[in-house]
Amino acid sequence: MASSLTTRLEALEARSPQHYSTLQRHLPLLQTALDDATRPYPTGRQLYAHLEDPPLPARTFGRLLALLVELEIIDIYAERSSANRYDIRAYDTADLEELEVLLA
Image (cartoon, rainbow, N blue to C red; front, side, top):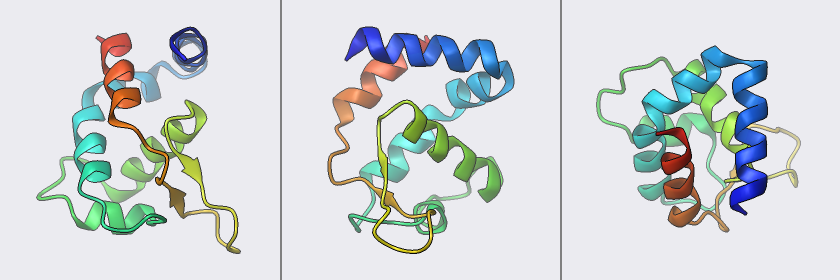
């Protein structure tokens, strides 16, 4: 997975340096939200609501979740009509830790 994650991350940095640096800064916050999730298919708002005094707006947090989908760390739950639910059943903290190492 490392090489493909590396490739996707490099593409993100080339395409959108701002999103790349925001992801870099707030990755621990995303990890906290995912680790504390109590539902297998949470919305971005549900994940955001569990955070204590988050340093970024909900919309930015949602964009970071979408980046995790692009990087194939989490999935979109597409069985419903809305695309704002995330499938975190297969989420593995090792994947996020690998991303953290690559972002360092």
